[in-house]
Length: 315
Image 1 (spheres, one colour):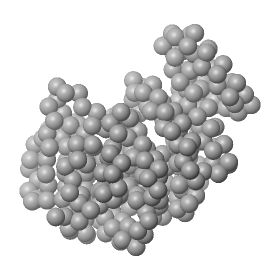
Image 2 (cartoon, one colour):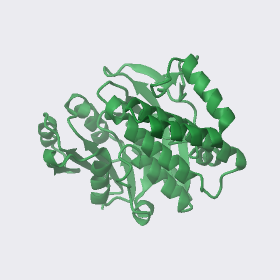
Image 3 (cartoon, helix red, strand yellow):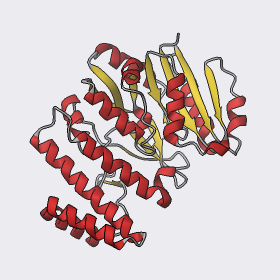
Image 4 (cartoon, helix red, strand yellow):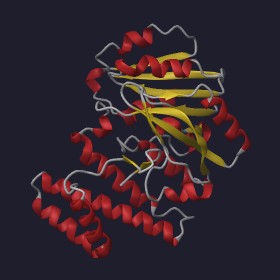
């Protein structure tokens, strides 16, 4: 039985798949299996995978007519895994050669940690370095950050399979936030989340990513809002953490109301605005003004570089 299962789901990923797979095949830690779900690809993805000659690779193909989601694809890969540890990588990202070795060592020496992530280097569609994600806080502070959103990039995480199995694995109901739900469930189960403050993955930013498409904005915001509310009951949160989480909920509700308004559902939008205003009047007004000043009244704010150009900040 392999020690680590490397899992990936891919749909029409021909452009970046070879580089992504090479980074997994060339890991310094060799006791692995690589499970790739071809999630309904109609490009040359199946041929690229078929031409990889490595006994560690297992390919699971999904019929293109099933309209499978990322969440269902990564869940299929997870359910097929047998390793003690599960490492995730997206099909357009690149893992450092020593990533798996370092994360296994970390989990072996931190038995109370259920999931570990890392910093990452952001690259563009050509592989050019853009900047390094910000330094990650220590374990306890990092756990509190989950009241405000998903704090670790999915491609950087490794977690214990037995814990994930016990909590039901990936929740496929959260199409664009199944990794956030997984992390929250691990926290609710009483395990810690921690991080290695080194960039162990190159995360690629490009216009073809499903999570930046305008037609997915509404469901992405719905997923986020639902999970921010779910996170409010984490037992270890302080009053400060809860307040920060509620501010993120206000932002998500504001965006949800704008999404309703954009679709012409004015009554529902006004009702949601009213409810949000009653819950957090001062913060809602402040946030609204900031969005107006930045010209983002109708568009959801995007990650952008800090002034140092070396840290990523979510507005």
